[in-house]
Length: 121
Length: 144
Image 1 (cartoon, rainbow over the protein chains, first blue to last red):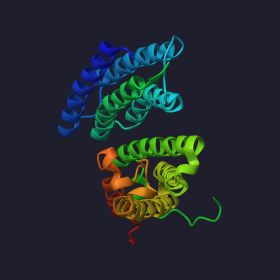
Image 2 (image 1 turned 30 degrees about the vertical axis):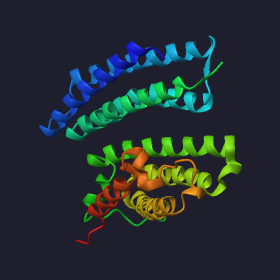
Image 3 (image 1 turned 45 degrees about the horizontal axis):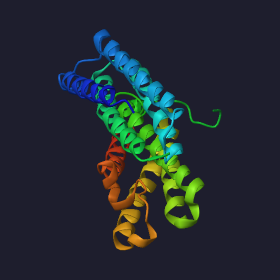
Image 4 (image 1 turned 180 degrees about the vertical axis):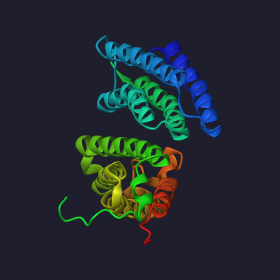
């Protein structure tokens, strides 16, 4: 796993989560900036996942490879699904969906880091 | 469906089961379905013999979340009933498995989503059925 990129993803996700939850609390629907920000986060996550997949093919693999792959698929699908649902929900709840997604994403990245750190040669 | 009764104007709340906050619930339930069922699947495939009951429960939990997700997605009277049943099973499941995992840790060597009342998942599995049932109850059919 790419350490600095993981940290960057987590920080960006948490900052966005705070913003989305604030917007939801203020009873605002997600606008263009929110949707674009989520899409950008999705791109960041996608880069992280692609690098992790490349990492699977050089040298050491996580000992729980199946679980790792499951988490990778979940992680990469996360932002797009949240975006899709939030677009269907042009109310405050749309922002809550984005907020929840941005709170769970750091957990997923941390779990990925955790699984990746236990390797077999 | 042809067997469903004619739409009644007295049930406007029903149609909203899958919108608004319901859409947030749908997202969280879908997440629960994915994490519980994939966890259960990995456990059943890789080391089923270690604790068959716990791993089957793990997979079963995933199935329950999946059904609840479908119910919330369909909405309407039928979706509401599906969600009601699965949320009730979920509530019983998290309470029973949570208690068992505390009382008999040997039978539950690996965590399932419901172990120790879902503490491995920030107790979300414990809170979620209450929130789900509250939302479903709010959208109960009301005559007139």
